[in-house]
Image 1 (cartoon, rainbow, N blue to C red):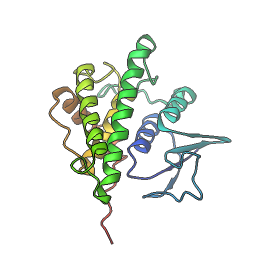
Image 2 (spheres, rainbow, N blue to C red; image 1 turned 180 degrees about the horizontal axis):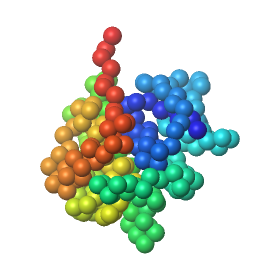
Image 3 (cartoon, rainbow, N blue to C red; image 1 turned 45 degrees about the vertical axis):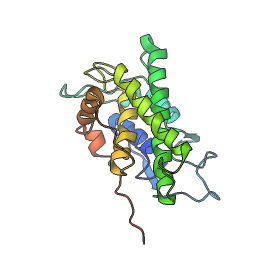
Image 4 (cartoon, rainbow, N blue to C red; image 1 turned 90 degrees about the horizontal axis):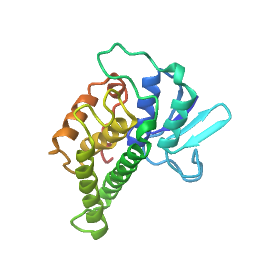
Length: 212
């Protein structure tokens, strides 16, 4: 198994967390910064991309779904100190509700990354109506997610893919100084619980590069 990623990508981090939770080993093809468009690992010209034998997959949600379906036996039993990794992307009995939460988190994550990528060019919410809309979208998504999360996370009793999907871009938001996001008590508590999980500690966001 081989994973193409950058240490800064919140989307790749989601896959790395799931791989760590499942106890799966893989070859790491790491290139921090933007990969050349002349030789991308996949047609989206983005990471993560996973190779598993002859199969090559891209986009983090697809990769996570594949890993959960293909390697359920690899899932560690856990010691009871923390909830186990959910065996599904979405709970069967709440499939559409969970998929709606995941879609909202994905929209929020994309807007956070857009805000960050435009920062070096001086394109900010203060100077661009489009970027102001991106910031407003993040705030709106987080406000709605606060109404959906419980005191135990998005799926009580589990460390869910929704929890992971929320944590990774928000941790990126903090690490890159994109925008303040805290002030929603249940989301704040979920973030603080997730940051102590071994799989999160093992997959940190790299520090931003300094110019020159």
